[in-house]
Image (cartoon, rainbow, N blue to C red; front, top):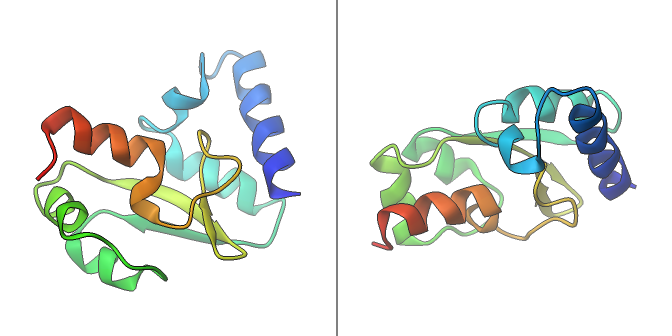
Length: 113
């Protein structure tokens, strides 16, 4: 159910010209996107913008992810629903927040720690 809602919302935003692709949503519009999805389905909006946020995630996080957050390489808002994290690029969900594509790109762009 959430997968279809996410896919439909991405398609709507592309159709209206708000973005060109799902990745653009994750480069500045992630909080707006999460709010739009949460208005359609009951889920938790979660964000990581500093190291303290990492400790509040309902999953384990690697030391390299924590270091990337501490260096301000990562700042993202996503959704948590039925044990998985979702965003515009991950409509199927991932078990760890750090495995969202936008976070992986950020870590790979600057080099793994």
